[in-house]
Length: 433
Picture 1 (spheres, rainbow, N blue to C red):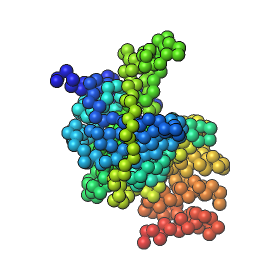
Picture 2: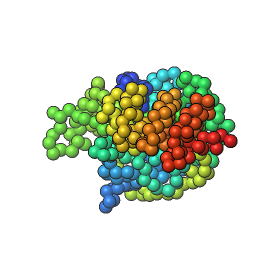
Picture 3: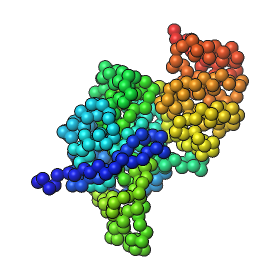
Picture 4: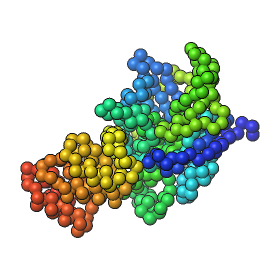
């Protein structure tokens, strides 16, 4: 009946100026949602863990075993294969994704039929950067089909008394790797080289730092082949909220007293509710289902790889944000003065910071990454600080120019075989043959 038709309301655009990973975002609500994109959960077991499937039309797109502890890592496994699931709304959204990006509001309007497949509640659609990686330094299509722990599958990554709170950054596949076509990958790679606003991929925030890639597997491969992030339109459910304290009755369940919401949080995005929203409008969790269990699907049995040998990791991110807390001004532009100051610090901490920063900045801004790597190699300083120099040399191996060759030649002549990076410098000429 027409009165049960999903109603997707675009509420407002959100200020994302302080979020380096997100260029724009829009808040929207779903009423009478079809709930065919949904999570199904098992009861919590004696180890305080539970199985879950993120499903589309009753078929699992991804599987997981999740802990109740927010800083503990979850286990993930691949799903059925999105190409095997009939979904006209997703097919229509794919057409929109390939028509070019105009604005976040325009994109939200175009994919409303797909958004109507969500359950009732509040969501954000964000234009984000995503690394085509699993968060452990591997290409995103190299995940096994079996259950495995991932550093990116946690709500808070803990490092040296500093916890990085989750936001959507890494990718997990839903399409069989056997369907990846090298010509299609190159088609999107050329668009990414030539277009200021290339077509976006489409993702759903799944858990912690991990996104489920609904559409755009060729785009993610193309981005990896260029050593770049892939731009994604990411659907982010509301995962936390604060409420007006006066409406909460001490000792009474929130599901009973249903307090008014004051603040909504969407994986790193936070803002005040401007309309009257109550707890049950946001947190309508489905009941546990007893028949959820792991099943193996051959999604990534065909081996493929694009991009560098090592991708950025969640640990790299944590190290960078720890540096940000200490030196200030590092993110989001990776301030060159701050980087220069770090490069002259002869400390283990500066070594870790620069190594991690180089892995990240290489995907976000290649010109700045080249300048940083060059300055690290030029400084050199004997046999000290091997980690930052090693990372810089390995990055510069990707470039063939007179300037780069001179950098390697100067380093090679200034060092000898006692330096563990000596052979990396020597390999510049071996690799070019």
